[in-house]
Length: 227
Image (cartoon, rainbow, N blue to C red; front, side, top):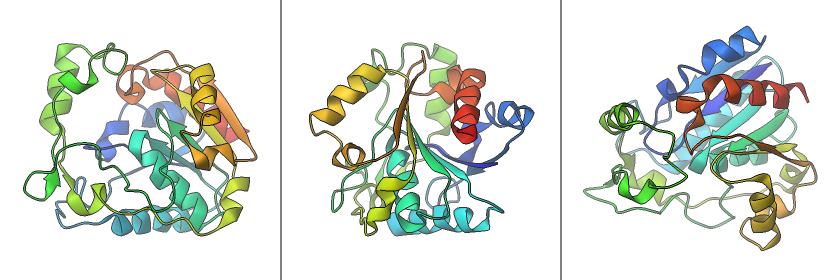
């Protein structure tokens, strides 16, 4: 099965370099995506541009792909399910929930000169970055691509209620499945609260398991693709 891999904020397709061979060895065809404005130099890119790129990758897949969104890109994966509910096998969300209809995509950090730069590690101390050593942190910060304002502040538009029938796997790295269930029940993800096929998978890692637990993450995604 094709597995489309969408990394979160500040990351391009190379974020999956250690996951790709693991998924290939497990019999799948991983397709890491480099999004407009996050790796291709298009600082004027918008959220619509990124959604179009993901949907184009879905359309290009020979069968029904599993669409994987990490962190904020859980929203992009969900938007793909909304745009092509009959064309995706499922959506996997790693360490993130989809933004609700008419909410900003990822307006979480300061915008400077039209982009949202990586804000540094202070905001991620604790469970998020506990398993990243200094070398990994330095490499991440050096490679981080500022997110265009048109992406970060883009408004999420969800239009097809058939998205709620798309199977969803929530991969829980720095939080537990029990916490995720509690947050969704408390209303923190109105979208996932309406999903009819929702599964939680625990993964003992920080927020970036593609860096710190690539083999384990690949097995989780392969299992999600198989189900």
